[in-house]
Length: 333
View (tube, helix red, strand yellow):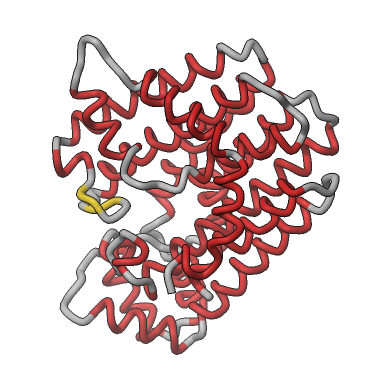
């Protein structure tokens, strides 16, 4: 079952409710990703920005601002900022991970080269800071610049933790909070800040985005071992081949006997992977039930996101955001 088939309604309702704002965000993105002097920039950016992504993160900003009664115009700037930061990190990630596929299409670094991906990613980061300063709101600038730094920190932490069998679930959560949840929580938080909301409301929006982002990443990691390439747009086993210690594997290593631990040390720490190793790894994960326990953790974080949203006044947009917590885990149902 695809993501859209599983729970299309909350996402589609939100996109419909925000259609005018999303059109404005897309128009602003196209304008700001242009470059008079370097045509490679819009070429690379357009390949990823227009690849059919859900625009989930900018929708979080738009929805949070509208739910809090904001009439604009700077929620559009902030939503575009969030999408630029996200796109920049994807360009850099694909270079670091040597990925060949993103959203079901060849990655920019494969179509062009690593240099283009890195430099265009840098350009988008710079554009994002230009956009956020135009709001004239120092707290917004602080939140989003902190998020950008946290994302980079999480990615660097992952470099050292991802291939170390001593990595714990706590370290994994720290990585996830950095590389994924930081932007989710910033996206929702700045929507409340630009609307001038009270601190309790802003804290609830932050808690919602944090939990939603963690659930989203856990699901993404889980799908690496049990997903459908056609549905997810990524190759099953990519994390395994890239020797990434994600939550299902961390749980399995903790339960491993000496023979199993030696297998994980060979394929993850030493990078000595052979034919049949991915299938054996999946057998070990199933044998210890770690795919099932990882799935439950994703569902628990989605429930935490729903609970945070219930701290806000009732509205249609609140219901749609609550439904998004089901949307992000629908791929594992």
